[in-house]
Length: 71
Image (tube, rainbow, N blue to C red; front, side, top):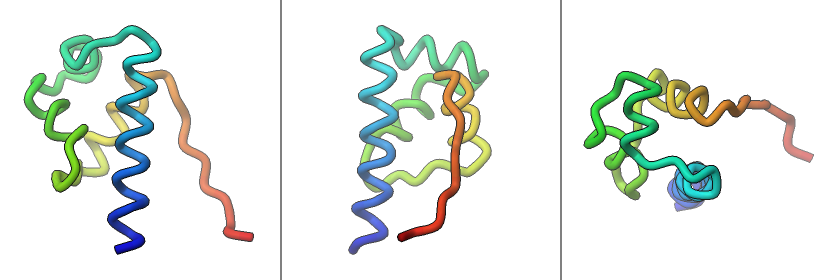
């Protein structure tokens, strides 16, 4: 259950960031080369994106991923 919650929170944060940047799902699809329906599915709980598509989405938002050890 905890894993699903983390995944949901991460995807939710990405969608919120996209909206804060005034970008639409169509904007993301154009930046990534993914179709808009793929972007839409990525933002819904229960549809885990591939790592490749996740990274494309992150890049479209001009974000970086940082891995840190748990404290």
